[in-house]
Length: 458
Image (cartoon, rainbow, N blue to C red; front, side):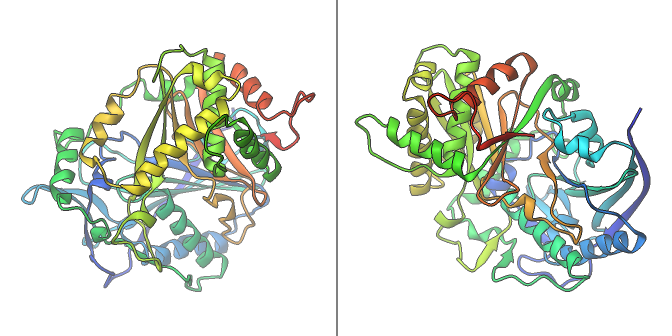
């Protein structure tokens, strides 16, 4: 039976400092400690079908990782609880800091993995690394590179969410890939990077960070344990990927505007329009009750541009996102103007957060815990994340996926392969996926058409 075999395990060391402020010890903010309860790392997979991996290219891959870590030194550190001060830090002071690199070989068919409509979660899981998250200190980043015997290469990553969010992570991947692609030449960008949490200005920042830590991980240094059913839940769910081109996205946005009845005319962003369309399609697939607030959609909003401590020429790499809850009813979502209703609800919630980005921050964990018991949609990622631009010198990837999707109704979003396109992957129970897919496609079809040419299924 085709599978994945580990060939070697190595280590990309962290080069000696000095490191930019705050130095080798990075105290975490409440935007970081918010993620301490996660029981698995964030795992991403990039598949490169037309690549070959020689000994020299493998060496360059690993040495460029070491170079990139000098710009993103927290990734080489360990998540640590400082008992005396009672706070969480990323500690990069130890001489053994660095990143584990797994080298593997697979006889799986990479072209099948790229083109298959339904994701083979077992195969994808074996192509990404993981690490123990039982007890602090724990590593925060790991890499796996896999050579396919029939041709092709994959790069899998595992990230502890407390160290950075997706914006910081994909900037790191861009930096690393550029160094590798340019044979070790340092990456130059018009944006500096900063890991200093002082950009987040709040009068009670340390107090709130400790509250989150005690609420979400009360037994430190022990971390919350993943239920035994976690892997079973991963396998139980079906995942399918949809790619919407620029024409399809424009159609969705215009359709939302034309549906607006006696409401302010607006043009939603691509991320909002697609999230709303997924929400409406799920409401139809799951036949939601008509009661008010019977369903909620959660999406993550980047706060960087709305924080007073932010500098336009510096990219803050730590966590700087807020979960935004949006509530609705099955009746509003499945109405003829359901897409407009969903877009308006999401847009109003996002606008409120942008106006007061840290308002009510101390209640964030309770907000998530007390979400409606009915259908929930969780949107991760953004239509602006250029995951398909990550080129290590082997060309751009043929497929990129978030592997660590564990929730029914979870959605991951990236900018697609083609310019202006957006990729959305959704996890659902097997029995609901077919109904959802029909509703999703029908919502993109113009009158008189049974399908929409601007939407592709992998």
